[in-house]
Length: 314
Image (tube, rainbow, N blue to C red):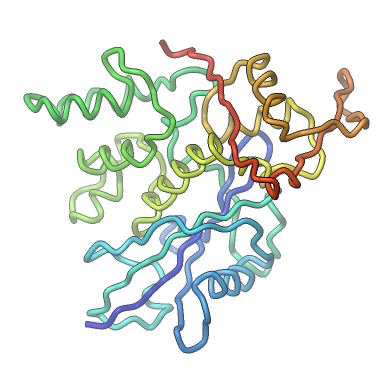
C-alpha cells in the first residue's frame, strides 16, 4: 500500500455580509476544497507546496495561513485521487489548512474556482437573526428518533443543537456535523455507507470526500481563535468602520452581538485607533474609519476580541 500526502485548504474571505470559502466545482456538482499533493522531492515544506498550487489553481497568493489538522481515516476517498495518479490501494492522508484573506479576490475566468458562502453547507450555524427554524423543524425530530432510548445520544444531541433548554455553543461546529453524520442525516454518510440518498432532509449541501468535515474544523478553529487572538483583522481592509468590524465578527460567529458592549470591550483591547477620516458614499451618517494597530502584536498583545452575544434564542 502506498501513502500519498495531500494538502487541503479552507480559504476564508468576508464579503457582502457573508463568510465565503473558495471551492473547486466538480463534474458531479459536488464542491471540493482546493487540494493538491505534497511532493517530497520537489517541495521543501508543506506550506510552500500549499502556496504554490493554490496560486496555480486560483491565481493569487495566500496571506494568513495556519495548519488545522491531519485527516487520515482509512477508506476516505479523495476527489483528486485520479489527478494525483494514485494507485487503487493508495492511502491518502490530507493535511488541512486555514487561510484568511481580506477580500473575495477575483478568480481568473480561465480557472474554475468559485467563492461560496459557508452557511450553504452549514445552514444551522447562522443565528444572527435568531435560531434557524430548520433546527427544530428538520433536524431535531430525526435526531430524537435516532437517539431514542439512548441517554448518551440524547444528551449529545441536546448539548450540540441547544435542545431541551440547553445553550447554543457557536464553537461546536464539528461536533454538530459529526453527530449528524453518525445519525445518518447528511448526504456524505449515505454516500460513504453505500445507502440511499437522504436529500429529503435539508442538512446543508454535501461536499466532496470529507471536505465538509474539514470545513467544519476550520469554522470551529476560527470561531474559537478570534476570542483569544486578533485574527479577525486578517479579514478586514486596511481601514474600516467599527460597524463593519462588528458585522464581520457576527458573520464568522453566526451570532448577533451587543453593540455597546462590543465597542466598550474593543476599546479596552487597544487594537484599533481612529484615522480621523470619515467613510463617505454610504448615504447615511458618516462614520469614522479605524485601523488595526498591528504593531501591538510585536509588543506581546495577544488577546482576542470579546464577543458579547445577544441571547435571542433563549
